[in-house]
Length: 123
Image (cartoon, rainbow, N blue to C red):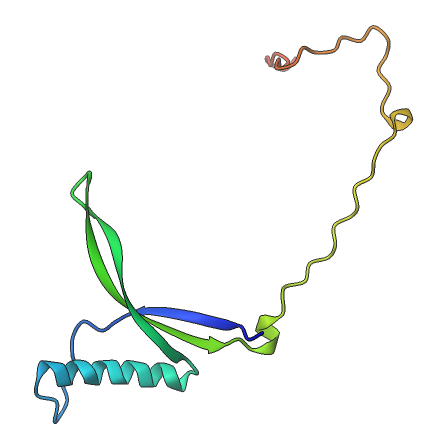
């Protein structure tokens, strides 16, 4: 089974000025192309663009919902990254038999359930 690592970035909001890119659409396409080529050089594959809601605070108690354009990229995990982290096994629990349990002296007061000893100044 192939495992992937994902990266989600905000889409560019403005275009890049460049020779030959005169319209807003051309400048925006250039900014997007540069971003995708930079990530592609790092091994990231473009997956999709999503517009997602985001709640923002307004004033002291108000909120408003804005929508953010996000770009989703992924790349395969390396073999050493895909292996689950190994942790040493926990020591097995040991059942204590009644004979091994600490003995109470006869007549020792058993505190009532839900009460705690009183705490006072040290003597």
